Amino acid sequence: DGGITQSPKYLFRKEGQNVTLSCEQNLNHDAMYWYRQDPGQGLRLIYYSHIVNDFQKGDIAEGYSVSREKKESFPLTVTSAQKNPTAFYLCATLRDRDRGGYTFGSGTRLTVV
Amino acid sequence: QKEVEQDPGPLSVPEGAIVSLNCTYSNSAFQYFMWYRQYSRKGPELLMYTYSSGNKEDGRFTAQVDKSSKYISLFIRDSQPSDSATYLCAMTSQGAQKLVFGQGTRLTINP
Image (cartoon, rainbow over all chains, first blue to last red; front, side, top):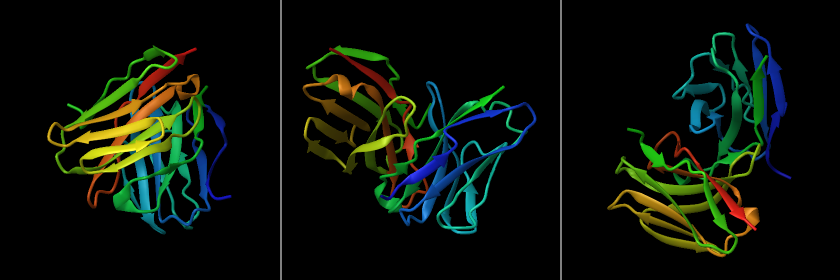
């Protein structure tokens, strides 16, 4: 059963900590994306990657880092430099860049405590 | 001004009503238009996909694109309580690296 697995579903972070959100896909899609969703603001692009070992900053990359060592995996690290990390984080893949049709994971809810 | 504008609502209608959801955009290069449905605490799922102008129908859902007015719509006929969700419009242009999303409209269908 193909899809995207995001873990954990809920994550709590203390002030000053780095945390890593996992995104794994078995769809064999080349492109992977990380979005942040806040109430009333829609989805904002953090980072994206179209091939292994290559990634680009999105609109709100400050305070975040990513890696793409394998086609199946695109982990997102929320660093202590991100001043307002509490949000819903969504990972997505894209089969055909020009035809839209993202597939989304079920998301990770990150809360700073 | 945002590249894509969508009224965040909330929008509340009785069961069986026809629902109209809309987005406007400013980038005339957009050619691919999508509607996603997102249930609470879940990831969005692709509902409708349209290329360029025109209408597309899928069951109770109809997507319309008017490129001359830079305006897209999603109509839901015979709305059901299970249609209660947030609806996000998204669009992109040929060769673009990413989708641009609207804010999302929160819809509630009351039994």
